[in-house]
Image 1 (cartoon, helix red, strand yellow):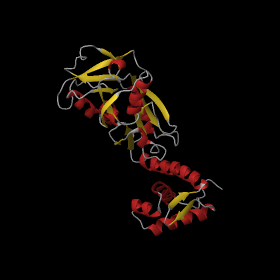
Image 2 (tube, one colour):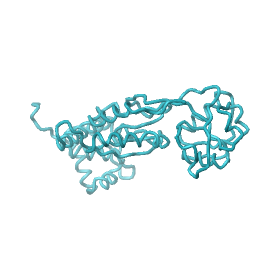
Image 3 (cartoon, helix red, strand yellow):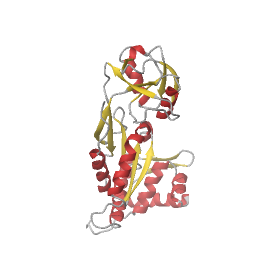
Image 4 (tube, helix red, strand yellow):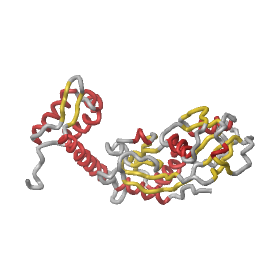
Length: 307
């Protein structure tokens, strides 16, 4: 085929296929695309006829599944559609100017540390780049990078979904948080062995909960969990009230809980292995120039260092 010959399929058909694959039903794709189900079904059939192969299995009661060929076509279609969108976006700005959207995924407890400096600094450099934020735990990020729903993400390195590209930003060891009037507050450090008869306020969001429990397990210990919460600030708030101690990684400058009760950070002795914070992005397709610029900027920032 000559390079100037048009393919027998269209980008519209490919976008319908990708949407149907993501939604799992023709009806779901139609609702997302704001077209009729018959329009989606017809586009899929036309695409299959053009390529001469079956891409989907459509059952009214069971929805839509991809054949092995369909899975391969969807992956290639995502790359083609991303390139087409990037071509369109690149023509909207001046030469050398970065224009267009970036969707940033971020683990919730990292958001207060990562996002303020990142969003403010990058927006100053590239005001026409539109930054959207998706806060999600590692398990909920799984699949979003590969599906093109998230361009870049900031996560702990203890559990990274899929096989993305990655770069280390910084690493910190976990620490213990106690109330300001706790007898341990002036100690500076504490052994995990000295905590097992106390109440733990567990940050119960993967991988934080697994990391905390594994530190105790490594020393043959089992902590006494009093409350499980999914918010970093909820841990600090309950600790500030004297309801228990917490184990956290991020180290805010504010020495008080959300309510204003003082909390104190104690180092763990002996020192526990640090937890790394990584920036990750899909292995394929290649990231856009604006996404690469965001990654470079993130790696250039002065991130927290162990005390």
